[in-house]
Length: 180
Image (tube, rainbow, N blue to C red; front, side, top):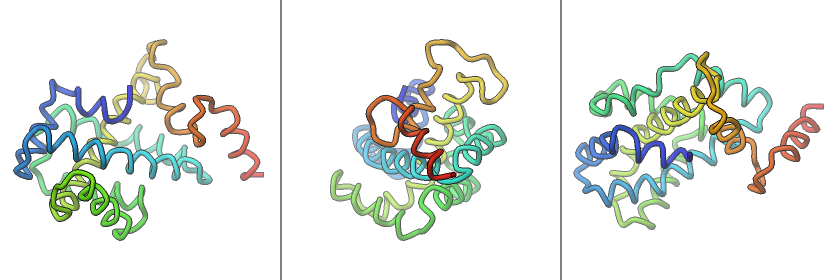
């Protein structure tokens, strides 16, 4: 399951509804915002994973973080601490506020939602995206839980498949060549 689908389907849509209420958006607007912000976050995570020690850093953050709580407890999206956590995540994913601003501006052009709202929304979406990755990593056994066979490889394939061909063998080979 994709990061976006995990967010949209968590708790029968309660996190999406909470996010929309916080910013005065209806369900369709909120989903449109997520459909444009989450792929940018996913692309940033993919870029980071392909850097030296990137995958181990991500797996460490997923294993040590409690990010799934943002999907399980939508009321946390109202807290200032969640925004701070999200800004930290954005710093790791994008590296600068300028990239976050560009992502918000581009999503604004696509959705018609004010870029100022999307800039404020982006840290919360980042926490939800990490929550989605945490939930998926739990299914793969990265956090000490049993891995169901139906989900094995989904998260790693998503993150490591740099060329989008559905196979990570060539991408892992290219990463190894960069390291050596």
